[in-house]
Image 1: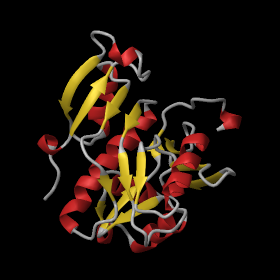
Image 2 (image 1 turned 30 degrees about the horizontal axis):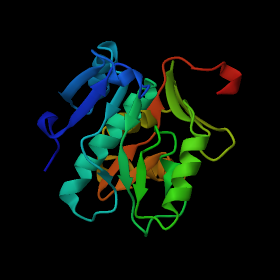
Image 3 (image 1 turned 90 degrees about the horizontal axis):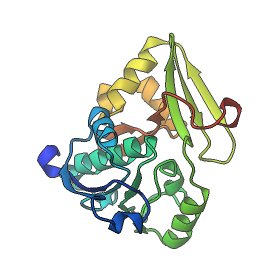
Image 4 (image 1 turned 30 degrees about the vertical axis):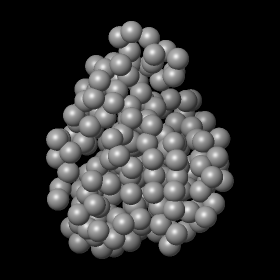
Length: 219
């Protein structure tokens, strides 16, 4: 089943600070949402600065009906992170995942919990202490796209000026069946850990940045 607006609900607040969230008027209530950038833009414009997902993001299941809901919730976390909105969410990985699978997602706001890994607490601590904004971003310039990746400690920068790369990103951004993306482009993105595969779905990991949150030389 494909997740729809009625399937996704967040609890939203006007401030990220736990004490401030207890003040009158800070809680915005349960908010039905759709997992797209325009909706996240509206949430931010409406004052949302902290959100809580309605259920665990489960990347361990082989059930294909659970893959789209998992991707849709990751999309929310990704796009909320891009706005510096903090998110309470929980992540379930599979023991079959690489011990460094969490690093692939470490540009996202850190989850509350990670389950399924033998070193889950160690991974969670590393994620929380090493996270910062703009860790994995992409931007579109005149005739090119550029990705900047610091998840591995150093700066890895990729620039592509062929329209098919831009087209592939547009397809991958919401998550799409992997066969809908040109195989050679998908292979390149996958080799650089820019795409997450969840069952048959392939999803674009970087979030888009319209302006740098730090000086250009530091990003």
